[in-house]
Length: 131
Length: 92
Image (cartoon, rainbow over all chains, first blue to last red; front, side, top):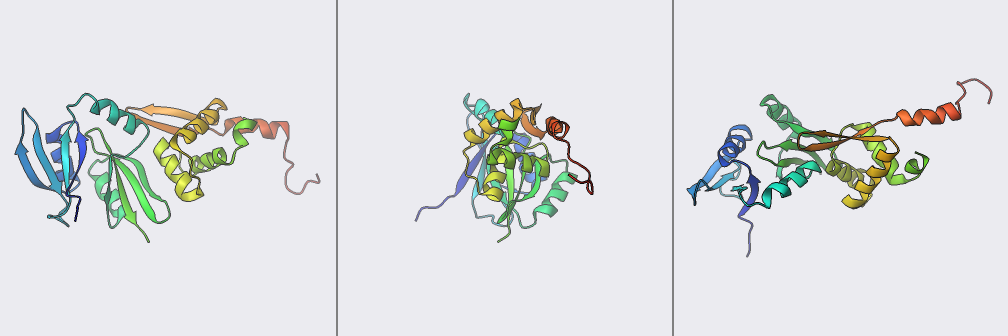
């Protein structure tokens, strides 16, 4: 059996990303292991699934990453998508914490979606399945 | 402008911008797929937006790293000027 255990987003600054993904979004640190230089193997998990898929907050040092992320953000394309139970409640909670919603909750039929800025160079989609 | 309006996908884009003004290309593509069943590629939608922009019906606003599309209905006024619509009740 093959499983997805780690997925990743490229973040501009790992320390800032740690603050946003834990302090603001509410994920928990799973692994924080020093690598070469200032880079860390830094992963977070949802408190709802602490042994579930880890999100790697990956350094953006490679020269291809900057232009790649900029092009995605310009066209509004999310780097990844997180599931929520109540998107309207998350919209209110995160807005109160200063999170920028590039797209407010929008009904797309089987799913309600919104897009936030993670302050680390990415757009992130939040999705609530409705059917 | 008439050429810009003479396409169902471009009219759907205007409908969606009327629903919420100031959308990214991705949001427009998602809406066209999910709400209109239009499986246009991102490149195709981008080209439709260029036609609408040339007609003055859509404007592009850059805000930091974001790029948003806005609806501008003012060019449509020339239709009513050219072919005035009588008020209700008037014989036509």
